Image 1: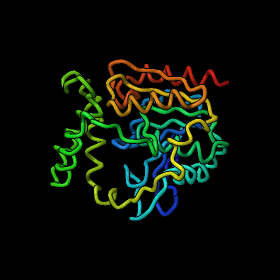
Image 2 (image 1 turned 120 degrees about the vertical axis):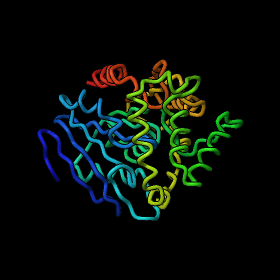
Image 3 (image 1 turned 90 degrees about the vertical axis):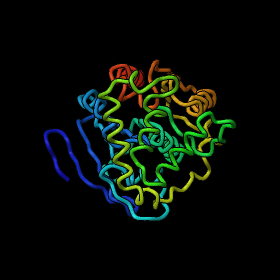
Length: 277
């Protein structure tokens, strides 16, 4: 563990993995779980915006960023629980994007007493049936083929067009600084592709999709209007089935609105958190 200013960094031994974490500020815990195309740095703008009021916690998932993990079975909800226990967090506001959103939802259902409020940004939903006639089916196959062939630059660029550029936009319509940061984060994941693929993520049992009505925490749903159709559909399902959930659509942004439009995202998140007190 190391401290620089008001930032504490270190590695937590959690369920056989070494998870790199950063804690900034003091106050009620505000925990951020990153997307599957990123690492903890996708939350840089949120740390600077909220660490004056909250104890902001973020970490790299196993095999992402600076974290490492052994091959074999793993549970995302168990990892979140392990981080809470390691950092002595009894209850927190929990924010998750994409893969991190799925983790946050599964954890909230498994440990409702530990989540004061839930914020899901373009989240995955465990157990949710796949949509038929996915318009991106050919793109997913092309990405898989490029990665399998070791052409990680091509796979990365194709993923950027889906998750960063989004539906109906071209690369030159996206802020180049944002696109560059997102590209660097996602491309770095391919450098430990073998380790990531050796992690056997176990599905939540029972899955979240069958239990959405059991979410008792105040819930905010955020989605970019240029996110992929599957995510748009998932958010609509969550809005309809989670009691008292609030949905906010951010315009002209795709899958990572907290990075692309941080000021607007922070205002939405801050208003929600302020409404809880």
